Image 1 (spheres, one colour):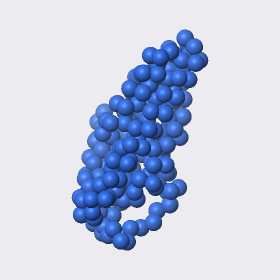
Image 2: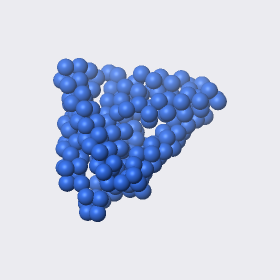
Image 3: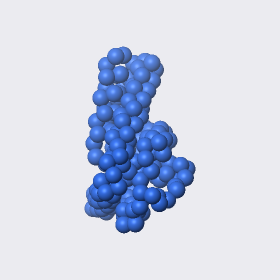
Length: 201
Protein backbone atom coordinates (compact mmCIF):
# COMPACT_ATOMS: atom_id res chain seq x y z
CA UNK A 1 0.00 0.00 0.00
CA UNK A 2 2.73 2.47 1.00
CA UNK A 3 4.50 1.88 -2.32
CA UNK A 4 1.52 3.32 -4.23
CA UNK A 5 1.63 6.41 -2.04
CA UNK A 6 5.31 6.91 -2.89
CA UNK A 7 4.61 6.35 -6.59
CA UNK A 8 1.76 8.87 -6.51
CA UNK A 9 3.71 11.71 -4.90
CA UNK A 10 6.85 11.01 -6.95
CA UNK A 11 5.10 10.92 -10.32
CA UNK A 12 3.12 14.05 -9.40
CA UNK A 13 6.38 15.89 -8.72
CA UNK A 14 7.79 14.79 -12.07
CA UNK A 15 4.65 16.02 -13.87
CA UNK A 16 4.66 19.42 -12.18
CA UNK A 17 8.35 20.29 -12.59
CA UNK A 18 8.48 19.13 -16.21
CA UNK A 19 8.09 22.21 -18.45
CA UNK A 20 4.88 22.11 -20.43
CA UNK A 21 1.96 24.16 -21.76
CA UNK A 22 0.05 24.16 -18.47
CA UNK A 23 3.11 25.26 -16.48
CA UNK A 24 3.76 28.06 -18.99
CA UNK A 25 0.16 29.20 -18.63
CA UNK A 26 0.43 29.22 -14.84
CA UNK A 27 3.62 31.30 -15.15
CA UNK A 28 1.86 33.83 -17.36
CA UNK A 29 -1.17 34.10 -15.05
CA UNK A 30 0.97 34.29 -11.89
CA UNK A 31 2.92 37.24 -13.26
CA UNK A 32 -0.15 38.99 -14.62
CA UNK A 33 -2.72 38.42 -11.88
CA UNK A 34 -0.72 37.39 -8.79
CA UNK A 35 -0.80 34.18 -6.77
CA UNK A 36 -4.21 34.72 -5.15
CA UNK A 37 -6.03 34.72 -8.49
CA UNK A 38 -3.83 32.01 -10.00
CA UNK A 39 -3.96 29.37 -7.25
CA UNK A 40 -7.55 28.30 -8.15
CA UNK A 41 -6.22 27.40 -11.62
CA UNK A 42 -4.05 24.59 -10.21
CA UNK A 43 -7.26 22.62 -9.68
CA UNK A 44 -7.90 22.51 -13.45
CA UNK A 45 -6.39 18.99 -13.78
CA UNK A 46 -9.06 17.69 -11.39
CA UNK A 47 -11.65 18.84 -13.95
CA UNK A 48 -9.91 17.85 -17.16
CA UNK A 49 -8.45 14.52 -16.06
CA UNK A 50 -11.83 12.92 -15.37
CA UNK A 51 -12.68 12.60 -19.08
CA UNK A 52 -9.00 11.89 -19.81
CA UNK A 53 -9.02 8.90 -17.45
CA UNK A 54 -12.24 7.59 -18.98
CA UNK A 55 -10.96 8.07 -22.52
CA UNK A 56 -7.61 6.42 -21.82
CA UNK A 57 -8.90 3.48 -19.84
CA UNK A 58 -11.95 2.68 -21.95
CA UNK A 59 -11.75 4.40 -25.35
CA UNK A 60 -8.50 6.06 -26.40
CA UNK A 61 -6.44 2.88 -26.59
CA UNK A 62 -8.88 1.52 -29.20
CA UNK A 63 -9.23 4.54 -31.51
CA UNK A 64 -6.86 5.63 -34.32
CA UNK A 65 -3.75 7.63 -33.51
CA UNK A 66 -5.30 10.50 -35.43
CA UNK A 67 -7.45 11.39 -32.41
CA UNK A 68 -4.37 12.30 -30.37
CA UNK A 69 -2.95 14.19 -33.35
CA UNK A 70 -6.15 16.22 -33.63
CA UNK A 71 -5.97 17.10 -29.93
CA UNK A 72 -2.37 18.17 -30.32
CA UNK A 73 -3.23 20.44 -33.26
CA UNK A 74 -6.16 21.98 -31.40
CA UNK A 75 -4.01 22.47 -28.33
CA UNK A 76 -1.28 24.10 -30.40
CA UNK A 77 -3.73 26.62 -31.84
CA UNK A 78 -5.09 27.38 -28.37
CA UNK A 79 -1.60 27.94 -26.96
CA UNK A 80 -0.67 30.26 -29.83
CA UNK A 81 -3.81 32.26 -29.11
CA UNK A 82 -2.89 32.48 -25.41
CA UNK A 83 0.65 33.53 -26.39
CA UNK A 84 -0.85 36.33 -28.50
CA UNK A 85 -2.97 37.50 -25.55
CA UNK A 86 0.06 37.38 -23.24
CA UNK A 87 2.08 39.30 -25.86
CA UNK A 88 -0.50 42.09 -25.93
CA UNK A 89 -0.32 42.25 -22.13
CA UNK A 90 3.48 42.38 -22.27
CA UNK A 91 3.51 45.10 -24.94
CA UNK A 92 1.17 47.40 -23.01
CA UNK A 93 2.16 46.29 -19.51
CA UNK A 94 1.46 48.86 -16.82
CA UNK A 95 1.62 47.67 -13.23
CA UNK A 96 -0.81 50.42 -12.19
CA UNK A 97 -3.38 49.63 -14.90
CA UNK A 98 -3.65 45.87 -15.14
CA UNK A 99 -6.90 44.63 -16.72
CA UNK A 100 -9.34 42.82 -14.46
CA UNK A 101 -9.99 39.27 -15.63
CA UNK A 102 -12.66 37.15 -14.01
CA UNK A 103 -11.67 33.97 -12.23
CA UNK A 104 -14.16 32.05 -14.35
CA UNK A 105 -12.43 33.15 -17.56
CA UNK A 106 -8.99 32.14 -16.30
CA UNK A 107 -10.25 28.80 -14.98
CA UNK A 108 -11.87 28.07 -18.34
CA UNK A 109 -8.59 28.85 -20.12
CA UNK A 110 -6.65 26.65 -17.70
CA UNK A 111 -9.09 23.79 -18.25
CA UNK A 112 -8.78 24.14 -22.04
CA UNK A 113 -4.97 24.28 -21.93
CA UNK A 114 -4.75 21.14 -19.83
CA UNK A 115 -7.42 19.27 -21.80
CA UNK A 116 -5.66 19.85 -25.14
CA UNK A 117 -2.28 19.08 -23.61
CA UNK A 118 -1.28 15.56 -24.77
CA UNK A 119 0.76 14.96 -21.61
CA UNK A 120 -2.21 13.78 -19.50
CA UNK A 121 -3.28 11.40 -22.28
CA UNK A 122 0.22 10.02 -22.66
CA UNK A 123 0.82 9.90 -18.91
CA UNK A 124 -2.40 8.05 -18.23
CA UNK A 125 -2.07 5.65 -21.16
CA UNK A 126 1.58 4.77 -20.46
CA UNK A 127 2.05 5.23 -16.71
CA UNK A 128 -0.91 5.98 -14.46
CA UNK A 129 -3.47 3.90 -16.36
CA UNK A 130 -1.66 0.57 -16.02
CA UNK A 131 -0.66 1.42 -12.43
CA UNK A 132 -4.21 2.27 -11.45
CA UNK A 133 -5.59 -0.92 -12.97
CA UNK A 134 -2.96 -2.98 -11.16
CA UNK A 135 -3.52 -1.21 -7.84
CA UNK A 136 -7.30 -1.44 -8.10
CA UNK A 137 -7.10 -5.15 -8.97
CA UNK A 138 -5.07 -5.76 -5.81
CA UNK A 139 -7.38 -3.64 -3.67
CA UNK A 140 -9.70 -0.64 -4.18
CA UNK A 141 -7.89 0.96 -1.25
CA UNK A 142 -4.62 0.80 -3.18
CA UNK A 143 -6.22 2.37 -6.25
CA UNK A 144 -7.79 5.15 -4.19
CA UNK A 145 -4.50 5.81 -2.39
CA UNK A 146 -2.67 6.08 -5.70
CA UNK A 147 -5.18 8.58 -7.08
CA UNK A 148 -5.39 10.74 -3.95
CA UNK A 149 -1.63 10.84 -3.40
CA UNK A 150 -1.04 11.74 -7.06
CA UNK A 151 -3.57 14.55 -7.34
CA UNK A 152 -3.11 15.81 -3.80
CA UNK A 153 0.63 16.11 -4.32
CA UNK A 154 0.15 17.68 -7.75
CA UNK A 155 -2.01 20.44 -6.27
CA UNK A 156 0.46 21.12 -3.44
CA UNK A 157 3.43 21.23 -5.81
CA UNK A 158 1.55 23.48 -8.24
CA UNK A 159 0.61 25.94 -5.49
CA UNK A 160 4.28 26.18 -4.54
CA UNK A 161 5.20 26.78 -8.17
CA UNK A 162 2.59 29.54 -8.51
CA UNK A 163 3.90 31.24 -5.35
CA UNK A 164 7.43 31.08 -6.75
CA UNK A 165 6.36 32.57 -10.09
CA UNK A 166 4.31 35.30 -8.43
CA UNK A 167 7.22 36.33 -6.21
CA UNK A 168 8.81 37.86 -9.30
CA UNK A 169 6.19 40.62 -9.07
CA UNK A 170 7.72 41.87 -5.83
CA UNK A 171 11.00 42.57 -7.64
CA UNK A 172 9.42 45.44 -9.58
CA UNK A 173 7.49 46.11 -12.80
CA UNK A 174 10.55 45.71 -15.03
CA UNK A 175 11.33 42.21 -13.77
CA UNK A 176 7.66 41.29 -14.03
CA UNK A 177 7.50 42.53 -17.62
CA UNK A 178 10.65 40.59 -18.56
CA UNK A 179 9.29 37.45 -16.93
CA UNK A 180 5.98 37.94 -18.71
CA UNK A 181 7.92 38.14 -21.97
CA UNK A 182 9.48 34.76 -21.21
CA UNK A 183 6.02 33.30 -20.63
CA UNK A 184 4.97 34.59 -24.07
CA UNK A 185 7.93 32.79 -25.64
CA UNK A 186 7.21 29.61 -23.67
CA UNK A 187 3.55 29.55 -24.67
CA UNK A 188 4.45 30.18 -28.32
CA UNK A 189 7.11 27.45 -28.35
CA UNK A 190 4.80 24.88 -26.82
CA UNK A 191 2.04 25.92 -29.19
CA UNK A 192 4.22 25.52 -32.28
CA UNK A 193 5.63 22.24 -30.98
CA UNK A 194 2.19 20.75 -30.36
CA UNK A 195 0.89 21.97 -33.71
CA UNK A 196 3.82 20.49 -35.62
CA UNK A 197 3.66 17.27 -33.62
CA UNK A 198 -0.01 16.96 -34.38
CA UNK A 199 0.56 17.54 -38.10
CA UNK A 200 3.66 15.42 -38.60
CA UNK A 201 3.44 13.07 -35.61
